[in-house]
Length: 200
Image 1 (cartoon, rainbow, N blue to C red):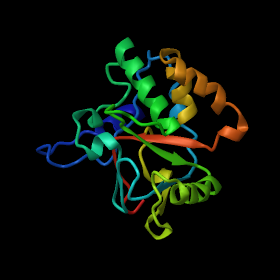
Image 2: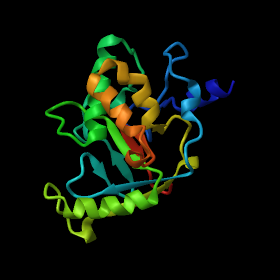
Image 3: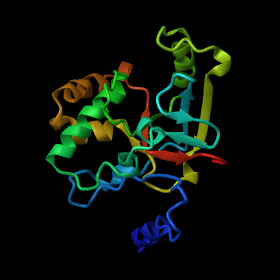
Image 4: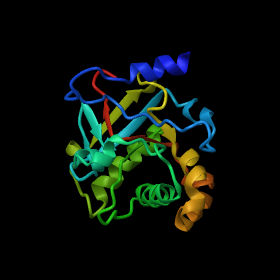
């Protein structure tokens, strides 16, 4: 009954002009990923954004690169119609996204968050000093959200997605072993598409 209530809450009965406030991760029961991956999300997540960040972030909306470019794929959950080709495509873009590598035209619908305030503060200085960004400290923003104010499925831990998709991309499998080292893990979580964060 709870699942039905949640699903009904995500259905819009308008003319379609109203934008959804979030795109939920909705793995199917037979997908092979545990439904529990959507639970135990830390209460607070942090995001750093500069004028040179991918996508778009302000006090109202956080948009992935695909959502910012208004691509139709930005409205589709990664688990929807998941076949072997889509698994390979998602594994490849997940690898590029998590490594901060150039996308070369690939459609990246992920947005990164961290559960570590310390990492977020370090990342401010990284963006400031990194030659490809170099934004002034005044233009780099720290966003803090209360995840209890979002529906279940809004966020998922990066390691859960890596574990699920790594067999479809060799480079992602290599990244999995790197991320399993404590010094390379900083509590990353992902959302997808456009996410309304105003008053949250």
